[in-house]
Image 1 (cartoon, helix red, strand yellow):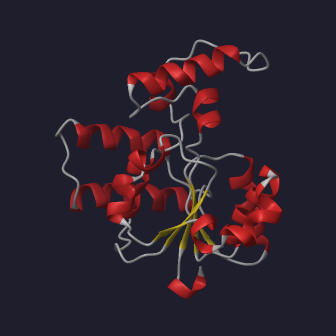
Image 2 (cartoon, helix red, strand yellow):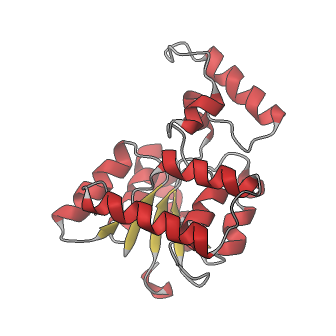
Image 3 (cartoon, helix red, strand yellow):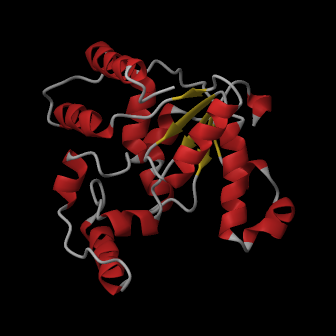
Length: 212
């Protein structure tokens, strides 16, 4: 990954099980939303079955979508030439949900693109080992950005702090979705004003210890 230059490791929590568990269906089709609701209903050890996806999102309880992550990175000022490593399992909906992020950041890589099938074969049958590969690349990245603050994101951020001041940016999801909704409704243009709001928001998080 380092052969592409300084890179961002993006922990993109947009896998089927994550979305089903959290009830986050923003940006998904009706068919996809129904599939996730069915998975949640049929998974006996998930106790909460009825979840309001709009309420979840408005409270910042949902991972950012790939499109929202692209808007976030662009607003922070990262150029389209920035290499981005996707640390994740299989993205729900596949390429259809990655189009916007891919168009903004064409150097979009993952372990399947960087390693051959033969190289991945010893690990591919074990989800924890595949996740460990993502963990290593994330720890070594120039910038680490988690789209959701789960266990791996916290572990990577802590590991990076142990090694010194390696930049980690934790998006303020609750504040961001309100800005993105304004963009979608035409009340705010994606550009200098949005960028200024997002940069100021995360500078404050840095000063209060939410970002390192």
